[in-house]
Image 1 (cartoon, rainbow, N blue to C red):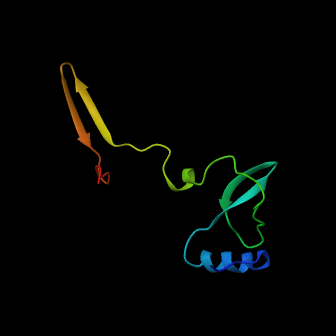
Image 2: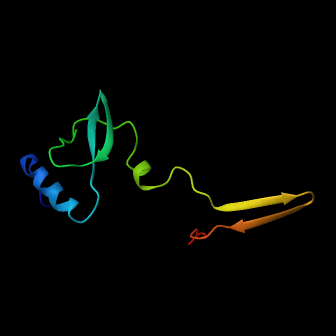
Length: 86
């Protein structure tokens, strides 16, 4: 197992940022929440965030179907780009 020393964290995050968006917990007016890491941002590693990391990566809502009703008829349409269960 490799360990990363706290002093090396900014350099490590800078390398990650070259390939992807990096989120870190930050203290914002007494509340700890996830934000995009920028050079000079100090991650709040000693506190719990107000939301889970899952809420960053997965949508809060997602449209799966659309429907239209006309009197006694209903038409259901699966939206493009939405797959069914795998």
